[in-house]
Length: 530
Image (cartoon, rainbow, N blue to C red; front, side, top):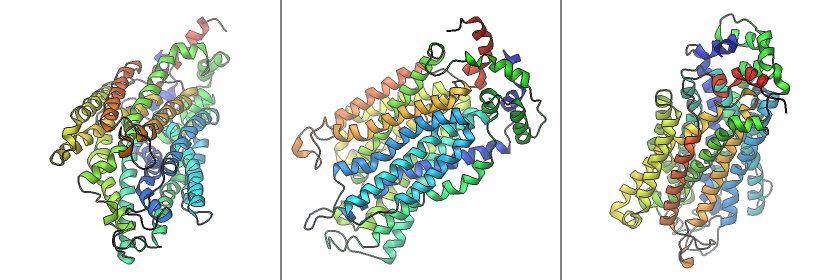
């Protein structure tokens, strides 16, 4: 089997860690930095949008986005991402990783800028414009998932491939962190220049007209890191695995990788033809052979990512309650509009520093020692335990003196999501499928995750409402309550743990060994043609 391995692919597998690995991490990682910034920065400005565009004269509290508008503004980018993952995942296998990579980035740059512009002045036209461009921004972000993961896995060596792919994903943490820090900087600058009284003192004066620039600046800055990496993305050669195994051009693959690795590599065209000669019989996605070989693997990667993201994105429900409970964000009426942006930015920064960023980098450090399977299993197990620890004695946690304990357990839940399935569900689909379907299968897995995110963010927004309709948030029907929602999330994490057993371990193995591409020639010659 090793004899079938192409020299150019073997050279990549055994290459020592060198500078081009780090440039690939930075180029792909900056895309992920931008993705996270763009997806999460909306949560920094939704309260401000409510104050500016939904102010009600004489109301005791500042204006807020109605439930349907809030769901659209927060969720439309997730819907775009889901569509983008499927479309660009498929396109990455059809046209090549590199060609599509620049396209996703340009879409992100254009839509980031456009989402800060409005056609019209009334609330309806501003929200419609924002939602339209946030959808297409999400569409571009969606393409970054399968392409970044596939490019990094195809460039990496066997020994440290997991750490490299996880490092690209970990740039998300820095994107979220930068979002919080930038919101602090912008709100402080505007607050210093245009100070205003609290809402309860002067409802109209508490939101200065210049606050309308704040949310636009925060959304538009996402274009800068994406724009900066465009040139470098265009200079990256196509991955050797795509060029050799899918485009069947051994000469180009050897030439590209000779430059990258700075060694002479023989262009084994005859071996490429031998490896791919049964291409007519090389199975596609919707074939019996794919189902037999990789059907359970695809079920494993899609189900675990779906279940994880339900739990991961439901955190938005509890964040505002937690921040208020520990005094990070006081009651809205006691602040002016810019002070509220500052407080929300500060809270997001602290959460990112204490729980999000460390979790990602723990995965980077340990994934090639412990393996993907062990980290994913451990992460789901801890998340299950901590969710039940929050849910079962929920009344105990609601007392003021016990709130710090609630925050600690809550933070640990998300530390083990990041040092656990949130990272591994991204890494594994880029390693276990054949080159000609790798990007598509990663896109399908990621799209299942985004479907889970939509369920987590919006399904639980309704579910977590008080069982007594009179105590539910304005505009929402009665739900099952927070305690029952937490129990349900614990069960979802337990299911994630069980579905992890469908996912194979890829630590230390070559991509062709995992996908069975080296054996395909032998197997397909034996199999009857359908």
